[in-house]
Length: 151
Image: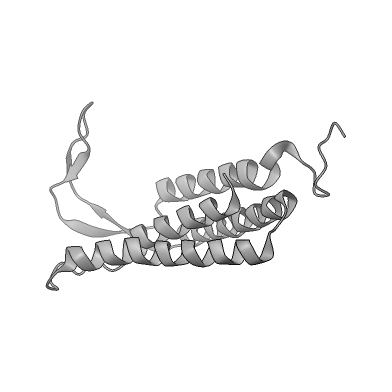
């Protein structure tokens, strides 16, 4: 995956996760689809123009991909630390389902529980370690000077 596709995927996922979901607004679906499509499309066209003007090398794209992966990895580790030092977390009193073909559904009350949610800490740390390994350390099996270990 080249850097432009990687950056576009990251922007799309961020918009999908943290974009506004105002179900009470009229035409909320059109607004949500609009910003999920229009913002990445605009960024993609802008990146295409920048790449045509700049013409980065493959080595530069690998370096940019490593930098972006490192930034995301640091953010995941920071979120894991914040989850680990949290004084409380929110959970539900009762869950049903979660069988082979369905996801668990919350049917109880949402309550505040003391202490951190260690499941979130584990998942965030695991994602950070995987991204560190796959996106920063192992990218193309090249060293920091851009040469293959066999060269």
